[in-house]
Image 1 (tube, protein in one colour):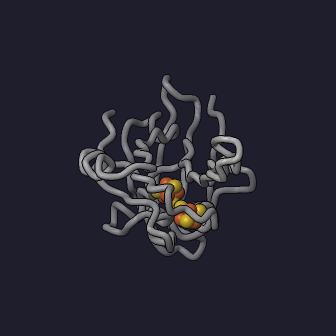
Image 2 (cartoon, rainbow, N blue to C red):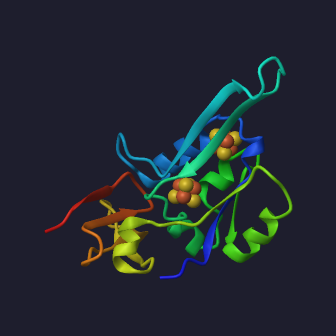
Image 3 (cartoon, rainbow, N blue to C red):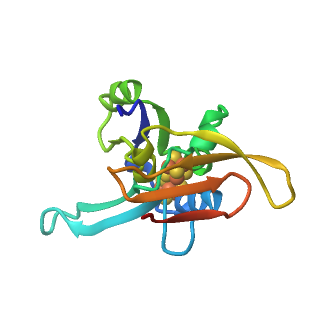
Length: 167
Ligand code: SF4
Ligand code: SF4
């Protein structure tokens, strides 16, 4: 499947606050030890000895569990990490548009998703599910096939999340 949407990450302005990590994890209900995005810290180290010029960057990196907030974006809302980043580091949009924007400035990374549970199915499949109170909520279903041995199911309203090997 050809990816059409992605994230442009202008990490020059990333403060390392980790709000994107937390909102993504909470919003998706990912359990302990699983993340949709991580903020990496590189540095500080001096580029030339005695120069006083340092390499020191925070770089947010989406993981293979980033689904580009498919439930939100299917409803016309921006991804959680975009919404909650006060430094406006992350932009969501069509990859071609983002690539054009990336050309205009340094210290940016264009990220194209490879959501592994999604890859198993080949497409995001927004669907409907019922929560424990019988209320209908948005959901995403993905199924395994011969390409990937993982499957996932998640809903928008609570911390329900399952990810595991299938037979
Ligand atoms: S991308 Fe934004 S929300 Fe995430 S750590 Fe950097 S400044 Fe904070
Ligand atoms: S787009 Fe959504 S799933 Fe991907 S890193 Fe941002 S908050 Fe997480």
